[in-house]
Image (cartoon, rainbow, N blue to C red; front, top):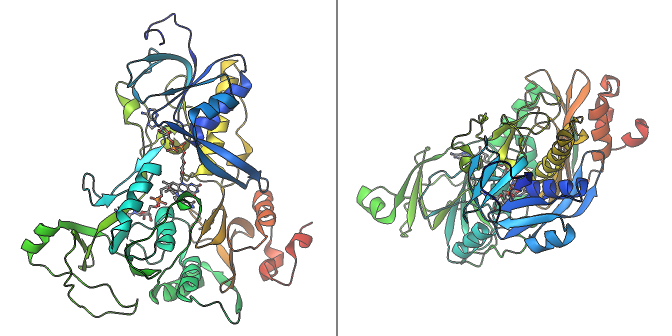
Length: 502
Ligand SMILES: Cc1cc2nc3c(=O)[nH]c(=O)nc-3n(C[C@H](O)[C@H](O)[C@H](O)COP(=O)(O)OP(=O)(O)OC[C@H]3O[C@@H](n4cnc5c(N)ncnc54)[C@H](O)[C@@H]3O)c2cc1C
Ligand SMILES: NC(=O)c1ccc[n+]([C@@H]2O[C@H](COP(=O)([O-])OP(=O)(O)OC[C@H]3O[C@@H](n4cnc5c(N)ncnc54)[C@H](O)[C@@H]3O)[C@@H](O)[C@H]2O)c1
């Protein structure tokens, strides 16, 4: 039990949150100050640890995320003390935090890493599930074992992973956009992925296409392809590896995508019966435009903004996250970003004295490198947690450090539809306006490579498949070499560009 929130109790380094950001921050502080106790206060009984860390290239990193009992962290770092309790209040003027179990802790420097929670399309409806942690993932799995048809709303990472993974259950996937995976891909990459899913059989012959598009040409091309419709199918990355995502039926994948629409209204069974509206059967294939009334009775019905209504067992709202800032707000005048995160400067410092923030809870509010942007990802949670600890350590001895190199270039490696996916810099030409050019190489069923160029300099890239280009492209983006002279050779599969730029 710590002393009350009044001086002269000496403060400690305190970190809130046992996710990747908080754990990395606490570990780094423990290394920097081996003779001091570091407090890690977290609401959950397990902590998330980074394992098998691999620096793939200068900025790209890969690692596994493992849930561990907090004692494992305390064993690795004897000067870390984990307190298992939620923070219910922050008194920033007194440098004090109060926890649910009635204790209070004085900090000299505090790092808030409480993450984010799913932003659901509708709160409080038991038929609308969000997926965030092990518990919610298991709840989803449990519901799925009883389901014949579900609806997935959203077009980001979770939706992409789920549609590929779910078997034995009809999936109606509702997206606001024209093409799938809009937070990670443009329509061209989306088409590359979906075409693999449609063609269940292996490609007999691999056709290779290499094209150079200006923005204008590209837009027309992708629009034409997007209009042709998309359909998806299965397999999946880490977080659901231990989960058997199977519904009640014996088929593998049955996905229907409703594009460019949103949820208008959700009806409970009885409400729907009274409304006398009609719902639709599951479309036979993505060209099926027939309108057949569904005879089956469902627990809920969803009316979409395109006026279609489908019944289903439940909805997964994979519609992004909201930073967990509420417990820290009362009486504290934090600057909060538009996305609801605690604004942090280039030293991960919030607007209040001695309070830092890292990971999903924060909004990066410094002037970023032209090829970096914040995305709420494991990699950034780790990098921010690490860098926040370095900044806290430096500030506590009256020093300041330069921004970490990892914030020079946005770099993310992941897996979608069993393809390795590498995203670099302004991979979707975000914020570049119309003044950019795209180079594209696509080998159906094998690889999709897109380079984003502006004034002859590479600003970003999407690499899908085993392209082996990540290091070279990373260097080209970082060194901003003028590539105008190379033209389409840049993506010519017969030219080894690694040699080219050595
Ligand atoms: C289903 C799913 C799949 C994902 N897949 C990927 C992926 O493949 N690649 C990728 O890069 N990213 C992925 N992400 C995103 C990634 O998980 C997050 O960006 C990352 O975990 C954020 O880490 P964090 O430490 O900031 O927050 P979190 O991991 O959310 O940790 C927050 C911690 O704070 C604690 N906490 C919350 N409130 C309080 C409180 N009041 N008091 C005390 N403690 C509190 C929580 O218990 C928790 O320990 C995925 C996310 C989800 C939901
Ligand atoms: N492999 C990976 O890298 C990976 C995988 C899963 C999740 N994640 C991360 O986990 C977090 C949560 O994932 P997520 O998929 O929920 O979020 P996300 O931010 O990736 O995607 C949210 C999606 O929901 C859509 N959306 C938002 N509001 C909507 C509404 N009212 N109706 C319809 N659509 C709406 C958005 O257009 C977007 O497509 C994100 O930070 C994501 O980056 C990453």
